Length: 183
Image 1 (spheres, rainbow, N blue to C red):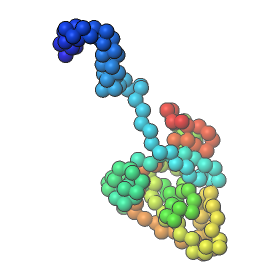
Image 2: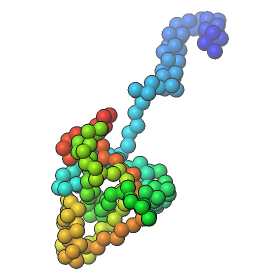
Image 3: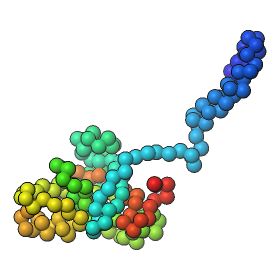
Image 4: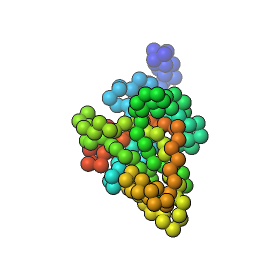
């Protein structure tokens, strides 16, 4: 194609256009076959509480079709198999406030984020627990699983354990460490 364009351009006296064509062609080729080290995916960064400190996470998959649609993530029904019916579950709980009163609460996070994680309780697969306030006058921001369980014990809120599993890896830990490539 380049040779035929050259003949065409020369015949029309457009030889000056060839350097521009070469530059555009190089850009198109670079976009069509990027080097793996130069590719990038941008996902919505979300925040959650873990033991009174904020962490950052991304959501990629969920086992509920409505939640997948609402959050723009993959619907993956098989994630529910991680609940471990009849065997040990590989999920942790995530406390979600469906009315949007506050950000979610995770009971664990990697520490530090990355290959040095020493927290064996952490899992990026979360079983969704819906939190509903029963006493509106008691609503306040809760920043740990312990606070949530204490308010449930007092009768201030109700917890509904669901069979919904979400894949939400933490990319920024409470100690400030981050996964490589996250910003």
